[in-house]
Image 1 (tube, helix red, strand yellow):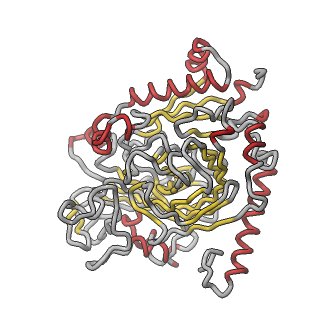
Image 2 (cartoon, one colour):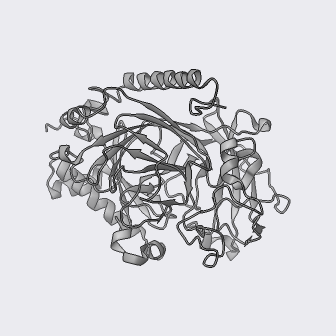
Image 3 (cartoon, rainbow, N blue to C red):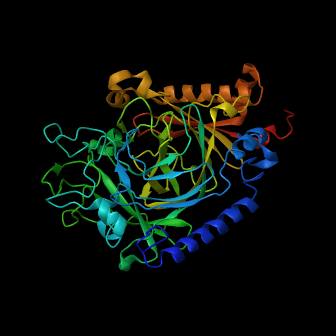
Length: 483
């Protein structure tokens, strides 16, 4: 069905105008909620504390087109790239700074239950199409695409996330900062009439999970749990439907997968044993968010989506959801923003390897801050992805801040054996120290004392190759401080 995105639809104009009215209503509510000021570009949070200073907001606002535009980017075989970022990808849409875009994102784990997560969904069906003759999206990962060089499939599964995009931001250049405001984020309904009003996600306790070599009894196994989410919002929690232990699967090309090692493999449930008596009476609060939002890096042409880095990517912080703002350093012309790895919920650490991997649709406002306007602002030296909410600032530390540069030509393979929480914590400490000293004018001694008593350091994830630690500081700590 046309959602204002299909120009061939005979009712396209009506659908598009409805979409714009809905987005306008949503945006007006956002403005009234106090998240925007001064033409939507000034201060966030209590007491007007924001990384975007009034002066920067004014400078940025002066460069915006007089008319803001709305865009809709559906997820289908023509608009997604599976398992990699690339500075060479053709943009799927182009936007101006200040524009609003709604982006559909599909989970890469929908093959775990095609009936619930793919069947009847035209976009998902086009992406997950896989017969003996072809795949809807052939390349899945940053690995080789020559059949003589791969064993699992094109891309070799070196990167797993289905990314929608990229979005080209006009006038974006290296050295700029792209501000990404998440205006909305909600689950994608099942396209199967049998499951109307529901959305589903998969949690895989997989071979790359932190737990995998520490199972009781020493018997290794991968277990997938399917969760149900109420799309209408009547229930603010997810409930387990069933789980099953992974057994070897043979894909339509005839390749056997003894473990979960290639994305999108359709699970033949005639081979599995489904356990419906699982997590009875447990209600898991949902917090929809995007595990992977990022810009294309400059260091390599094709980059695995799994390890996060300085341009964002697979950060896997559950706080990157509705109402949050992310700041990303621009590395290539146009920024080339892609969105994927949608989650219904996740805990800090993503310990078993995945979250509740559940398709979502998000609405974003993209604002470009030019390098020439950043001097003297908190964004002047920002060279990593940073998160801002109404109440908090969060820096993201990684085992390697920019692993592509630090580890050299073999970075995309070496990173998986070199990560540690210690390194990620050290990086988060250094970034928070820099943040407090440069944006709040603290001395190093003051910053260190404050970090020990007023900053929470948490393990973001230990499963993405480049492990992550985030540091959270409350904005109201500085409410009485005179700048």
